[in-house]
Image 1 (spheres, rainbow, N blue to C red):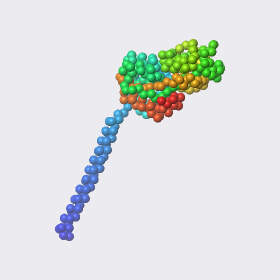
Image 2: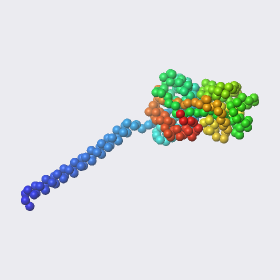
Image 3: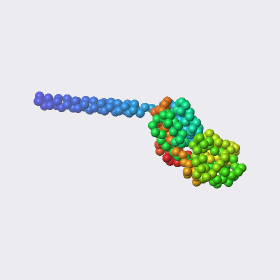
Length: 272
């Protein structure tokens, strides 16, 4: 074999080895880049953790409790703590300095108490609406068929206090119908009003239809046309001094998502 042929073969071998080395280096570089990109993504979306404290209108109790459990399951290491009550009472607590991350009110008016004090971040978003219904004893023994029937003598009727959204809405409906009603008691939130009927301490109460639905066979619901004049918008907002803002934002996102809206619609809420 001639010297020139041997030299040519040696050159080809070296070239092949060089190409193989370049392929290995390229693969390692790609692998390193992929890991680097993954690390970057992970740091851009930190894992949610800690407790989110949500102050929410009493009428949201069942649906928000379900959404809270869903959120905790989707984000291990998180916990959603709720404080349910009359929206005006909750708003007063927030402006008084109570630590909370999220406020979900049953009316823009009560949300405004918080925003006017600068205790909310950004613009509150309306996420559902709710309509009134009459709750009667099971079987509707008093044959209540209209809002006017509640003004009948001898009928024990309970209303929410006018300072809370369900009470303000009830008064608005009564005004629209040109009716005057003196209840046996005014309650501080819608659940308290409904409870009077469930305990047979009242014959009827004007509450939200979501609460009638949540009560099941413990009460009977009666719709009335004047309720269309008193539909409440429900706004939700991140609070300014939220102790766990990032996780709170994620909970608000769930409430406003298609999944959240499905839970809320199933509870009887109207779409915003």
